[in-house]
Amino acid sequence: MTPEEGQAILRDHFAPWIQDLGLSVEQVGDHRAVVRLPWSDRLAREGGGLCGQAMMAAADTATVIAISAARGGFVPMTTVQQSTTFERPVAGKDVVVDVRITKLGRTLAFCDVTLTADGAPGPAARASTVYALLG
Picture 1 (spheres, rainbow, N blue to C red):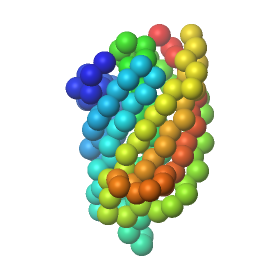
Picture 2: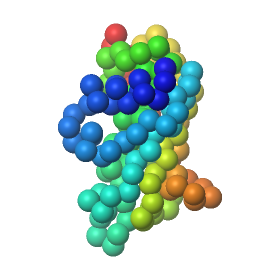
Picture 3: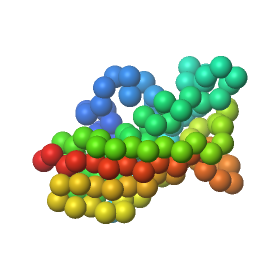
């Protein structure tokens, strides 16, 4: 799968409010995807930091791209579990969302997600996700 094919999945299979996040697929691989969440003042909470809800939605969405790449294309799936830990705030920078599939089974996929402010030395957040594969 190419980044352009990943971008088409975003366009064709996600709700308009997810598309409004402006996510862009930068890399896809056999068991990995990298998606960029661009900074927007609209996503900032009081105090100027990027809201956690936007970061969690980006992690969830990027996971679909990674699983789709590993499966050779989009298949129906749904989030079973997502656990997110926030380590440091993000302000005024894009967030790079790096998803790595740790186990891809017939009916479930498990992933680790790292969210890093562009250019930062360490993660802003980490997530683990579990997806049910429906097709």
